[in-house]
Image 1 (cartoon, rainbow, N blue to C red):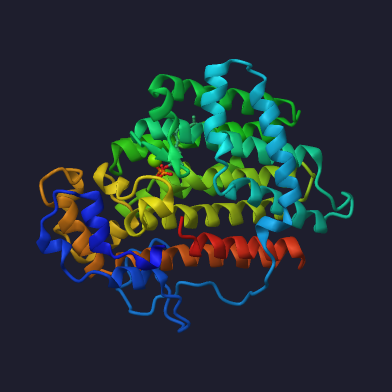
Image 2 (tube, protein in one colour):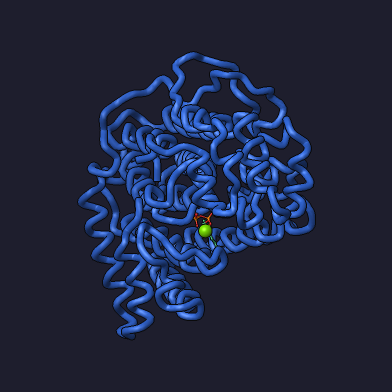
Length: 416
Ligand code: FPP
Ligand code: MG
């Protein structure tokens, strides 16, 4: 599906007022850039991608590991149990309207990338602790469910904020039931997740996942307000461990750092902390919990980078949600911020949130010129590589570890 798309077609789709000049210009190379899995080794970009000049063969696939394990199939049985459990968790309400709104989103399922990661992490870390039988604990399965519920709650609220009319290939809850019910359905899922979390009877895990909820809100507010200023606030009331791990996200110095920090709060924190929490439930040693966290953090950041890339390159049909949503909402994501390094004229357009006539079209043109799409994928690749290298250095080989590596690859190659 994606292979047939060209950038100008997307532009015409998202910006109907666009004149024929840009629509007929030759921009399809942006697609090739996105899908180029160059085998040539190149100098990697800096971690935030900000000071390295563009090179034509930026690496966009991870190296050094290959296996055919299917991450989705490997935890299929666990996922089926989780899905049943979610249904029970949600049906407690027995209120047809609110239940209908919450169930609408959950029944569409989505990629389930977050619970899959949590489940694979639980299985692969079980191999390192002789005190724990190498099996999935009920509390770990429950944690995968909690992660999915928190994610679903955040999507219900996000679609209200973004005024999105589609989600997961179907009409969004806000479009079907209205904003008020969509917000309340999100609150309801969050409440059910909180009850399930409390029932784990593990205060440290409760603290981690509660901090994640704060992070989701923080990330969303940073995104809404933009800039590198006061919106970040202090690091807040967190553990010493979190203070060390997250300090770089709280005082970003550049616009790109601010974008990565927002990405951590909005997307990566949930998977990073869920991966840490799932190892804590099995009482694994700290170095295992740390490796799990850094895997989730890096794959989480890569996931959002690819999400932001797909927002510019995929079709609404392929994604199942609106495209060019970020820039039309006034948001500058990685492809634009890479282009900004080469074309300072983008700066004022970012400042006015692309509101002037022609801003969106001109920015997209410059993104293509600066190879912003491929640079975004290359940065995502670096994060996945870091995640995988960290994991491999701590966990013994296993099918589930291979599946986590493949999950990283899936994040890079996904087209929806
Ligand atoms: C999707 O972003 C949104 C998120 C990852 C987080 C949204 C968080 C909130 C709305 C804060 C409230 C949180 C809770 C737990 C109720 P996106 O718009 O970039 O992605 P999309 O294209 O999938 O919509
Ligand atoms: Mg959204």
